[in-house]
Image 1 (cartoon, rainbow, N blue to C red):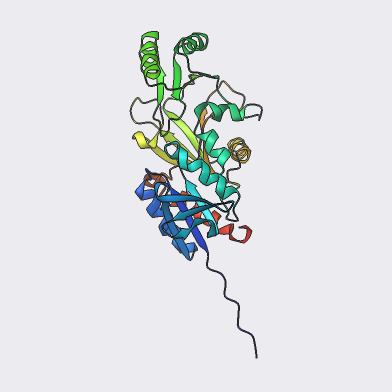
Image 2 (cartoon, one colour; image 1 turned 90 degrees about the vertical axis):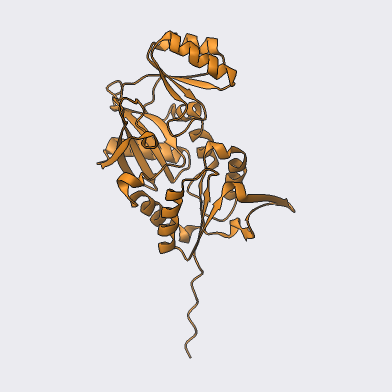
Length: 302
């Protein structure tokens, strides 16, 4: 008598969302995830409990042990810092596959560390400095020359990024920054005409999207009214995007570039995105589908 076929274990995907998650993105992740996985759970980070018991760190959402999932995809921002770091550290020591890393979170959420992490890796970057003193920032700007870009260290989605054209503007900004005790990174301004390139990295696959700003905004940011379209990925962009992602142990991320004639490559890296938006309005479910297919392919290695 033939023996019964052994049932395949159910596949389980956990998506950990930021406290301020975007509902439309989560909806797409859940819809696409349920096409591939037997079980898909979304856990907002502010509803997760960390328990230290008998020498073990445990993660719970409601009554679910989050370390029992095959695949865990944390989509967390700098706003989730206090919970994000211990969660990512615990996941790194679990059996679950996670496409992002604690190192990637720490670096990508710090504008200065983003650039510093790329130094010495043959990655084209712009002239960048870091300072907590308004006086030193002014000295740096004098050496860089106007216009200059000032970035709050933990800014995201185009927020906290300021183009300064003259000394009067600089002083007003530094007065405000000093008042709220913000740390500032100054960068040499590279003319982009409100256009940049985003490379979505999913494993070894790279998709390039060209973004254009709305109106006269120098920031090509979709959340601030810009537009986007997919373009062909050049071998040079692909190589740099993969170099950046692998240096941070990230299988899913996005790397942003600006075209420029000031480097031999013809572009510079300006940002690394730990939790990139999928640009649903312009790309539909293409990016999310790639993420889910990739995560499902990791079941056997989880």
